[in-house]
Length: 150
Length: 187
Image (cartoon, rainbow over all chains, first blue to last red):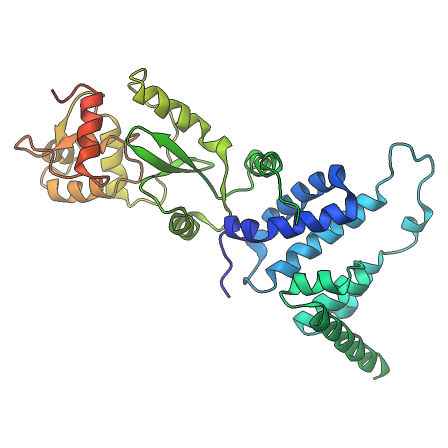
């Protein structure tokens, strides 16, 4: 599938990405995260090779930014969060592990276990539904287990 | 679903332009000769279209200049301001960078000569060909005028037939006449 002009990509996904960020972060932080999501997408856009899974791609960027936002110490926090210093975050490890899965299974596994999205959100990101997302995630996990057992 | 507010949308579009992340920005500009779709790259103005269908024009811009096409007021503001002044009769020369990088060499030379034709004056296709050092290329100059990527700013409305007739205009003869009348070149 051909990569569309950025205007069309933005137009198609901005509302649902904004709603997603709003649920995660609340209005004030959602607005900054929204802008950062699409600026990051713009920076990466020339590196994309095709127009498949753009929706999942947009959700992946938004999730990553939402996680960073959550980790960011608030102005009233005095101590650093020790948990965040402990090795690589879950999504980074998973992305590497899931590298060889078929694209839909990979996206479902990473979004479910790396970013903690629920199946309805993953279904929306993949252009299907919650049931299909659940199936894709468990198929991906089964495949990873088989690979691990080999 | 919570809609993205107009303010948030504008802030993103402004930020994208400010950070130079766009291959080409465009916006719609209302003028007395209709709504124009105006586009610009980092190097300058690259397209002015009459009667544009934004969907199709976005595809054309992406094809010619790159996929990072976004509607954004900021890069188009100088052109909008100067066109407003022009149509109010307060401006006779445009002071805008233009990006003719995708034009063939001959077209570029003709368009550069065209830019020098002063406000309120007309030249014939043959004269313009001569100024571009191709005196016998009047017909080719006509084609370049017809495909002028930046009408009004590059004033192809000031180019007329040897018999004094208006001949043709990419945006329609009514507009050519309106522009020449505005400039006082037609009584």
